[in-house]
Amino acid sequence: MSDHDAMTKTIISADNVVVSHEGRPLLDNISLRIATGAITMVLGHNGAGKTLLLSALHGLRLPQSGRIIGPLRSKQKMVFQKPVMLRRSARDYFEFLCPGLDEDEVLAWFKKAQLDTRLTVPARQLSGGESQKLALIGALASDPDLLFLDEPTAHLDFESTSFIEAQIKAAHGTGTTIVMTSHNRAQAERLADHVLFMENGKISETAPAQKFFTSPQTTAAQTYLSHY
Image (cartoon, rainbow, N blue to C red; front, top):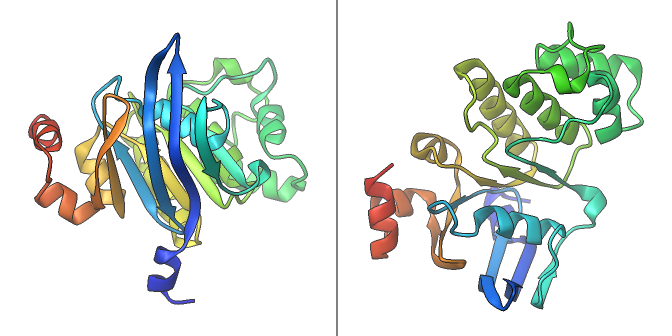
């Protein structure tokens, strides 16, 4: 399969999806197609609906109407901005996220993330950067077809951010489809193949990344980029 063919195939789609709360639409008639193998960046101001969109696409929030078609949940993973660390060791938490790996594989992932000295530390005692790296390697080790990342480097230091971006690029290089939110414009420009721009629970613009960052078509997107 050529790169062009892969990019034109759809791994997950949404048609006329509405998610509401107490009668107020939070996602308002969302329709989209996510290209297989691409890094799709979902951008927009706080409250635009980005996290909710990822949760709906991943099946964590059921829509009141509309349809979402995607891979089996077993072939999807989602990493949240603040992963919930369970009451268990870092190693046990990793094996909870990705059961079935042998000893060498587990140790290799921990060494890659520079967490090999933290295997027995309670997961809740890890730093923010360590927690995020642990959640990410737990997701990647299961070899998902589709990976959702919600602000995966928010408030992290340079080392943790660099590691996470490197892993995103590596996963992308092996064919994993990634849908990601970020408030870091430089990061979005480094990583994105495609951009979905959200405003007030709607997708107001969609474009290849280079086109979006150089010539956004909507006033809302132009205003957003002028502040980031």
